[in-house]
Length: 360
Ligand code: SF4
Ligand code: SF4
Image (cartoon, rainbow, N blue to C red; front, side, top):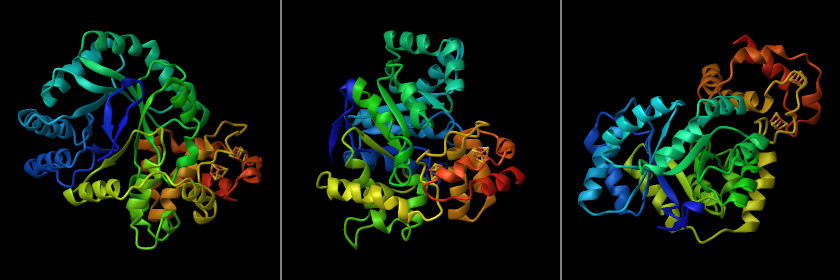
């Protein structure tokens, strides 16, 4: 296993982390706990959960595994999150989480899923930052972190608060272009960076034909290639993989073993070929993100990608609701000025896709 310093937290994290949101059968507690223990034996030391993953079952499962890891004197880091914003709400939730996890403190506690700057400003007005600082002073959390779906300048603005010790966001060979700005702040403030969905939320392994171009050699799996893409980024501490089975854990650990260091030529080739290889998929470049009626076009087009890849309208709606937290109706406010289509690097028929989304 390879370990990296997690920014200013100075903790040493494994470059693969265990995400607890995709267990194949969470009711089979013994198997799930076994997966976590096996991952720890293989060198993974970062374990991430949340209070709404499988209800509270994910946190409970990690709680059982942590008990065993403590018994065996094996080192591990815990990571979880809260949607609560008020001091009262956060304290109540954290108290429950610590009980479920069987811990005295959470190592990495996240302000969960900042989806817009407005949403962030509201949480700040509720006093979320002061509460997190107090919790840290009281020793109930060890590091103040944030998870976010913001993109472009917005994610940089969030990180420019310079309060966060670590950040968690989605990043992969599929959508790397939407968050490259975050790394300016990460570098400037020495913020630890964990990335979720390094396999594009399953898109990469499910579409090996589309992602053939990310491979370093012919017989390599796209999973290994996608993880190497993440490992190659020196500012990313950990690729957080949501494991469903023990085989997936082993596959990710194998990818660490075969990683021989960043190959700048190959990474640049992936970045330049992505534009050609994605066909009519939105690459998230954001050139169109200047709509006169303020439609967040890249977010809608990213959601539409899921229809192309999975041939299902429902995936668009799920993506808008659960990932981007924006209503489909805004798509219907387009005045068809055409400005976005003129600049789209992929020549995507944005207007008709927006109409389709609005009509769903
Ligand atoms: S065509 Fe519609 S979505 Fe595109 S910039 Fe104009 S108003 Fe916005
Ligand atoms: S310009 Fe085209 S490819 Fe780039 S974000 Fe907008 S819709 Fe997507």
